[in-house]
Amino acid sequence: MVRFATLMIGLLLGLAMPVDAADPLAKQLFGSKSAPSRQNPAAFGGYSKGCLAGGVKLPETGATWQAMRLSRNRNWGHPEAIDFIKDLSRAAARQPGWNGIYVGDISQPRGGPMLSGHRSHQIGLDVDVWMLPAQRLNLTRAARENLSSISMRRAKGAFVNQNWTRAHHEIIKAAASDRRVARIFVFPGAKVQMCKDERGNRAWLRKVRPWWGHHYHFHVRLACPRGMRHCADQNPPPRGDGCAEAQQWVNNILNPPPPDPNAPKPRKRREYVLADLPRQCAGVLQSP
Image 1 (tube, rainbow, N blue to C red):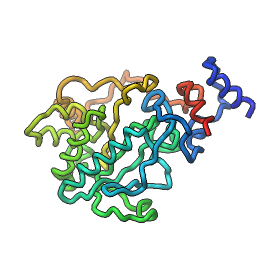
Image 2 (cartoon, rainbow, N blue to C red):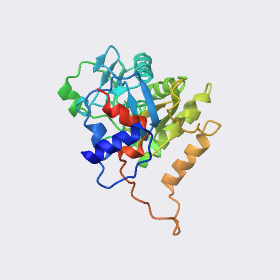
Image 3 (cartoon, rainbow, N blue to C red):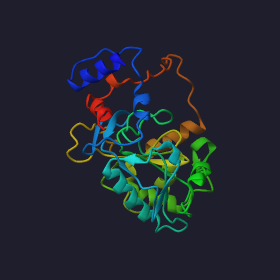
Image 4 (cartoon, rainbow, N blue to C red):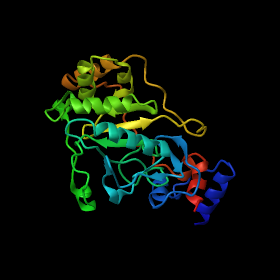
């Protein structure tokens, strides 16, 4: 307890503090908070190494959305993320077979590393949207724990399967066309399919990036809100629509290149302690 108090004081004063193996893990500190801090909304740090002040809760149910897996208490975000979700849900509700969207993880009440699951989603600007069309918007809490999304992938993610529809294309397009969105992560086959199907303005495709997994949901990442000087944006996607790069991902899935014998062995990531995060995160934890 004394060690933790000393660490908090040092962080608040901006002092460099050594990382000790006995320090509480940041995921334990942030995962223990069931309510947001009483501060003005702010994102501190980066998507995978930061925290959230003044988090806003996405209501469990709205006219065109439902928050899922409520037991996780991860339906908190920066106000811009909450507004974005509501806007996207209304766009989704205009698609055939969709009455809105099912929303997965956003962030914990004060952001930060999660006890399980995502390494990102730490500053209230990442949103997971289920691929399962939201037809019912009156699901009980129990149903939201037990209902699962559906996979869109075939051949290990090289192609979309029969569950993929034009509505998925249009909803992801609506999200990518939003000025607040920095990028969207989907499995490679979905990106390639959208590249093949788009006949209009292709500029939005630049934001859609292939990434492993992401076939049960697509992951929307918002840019740092204007004026958030302690929020760290990810580098912009490369220029162009990114379709050739996505096709290369697919080619590598279908015909995996031989392993590089000189490749270094992957190193296990060290779990973050509070001293690893931006110094403002100590204040986020201490706030009532």
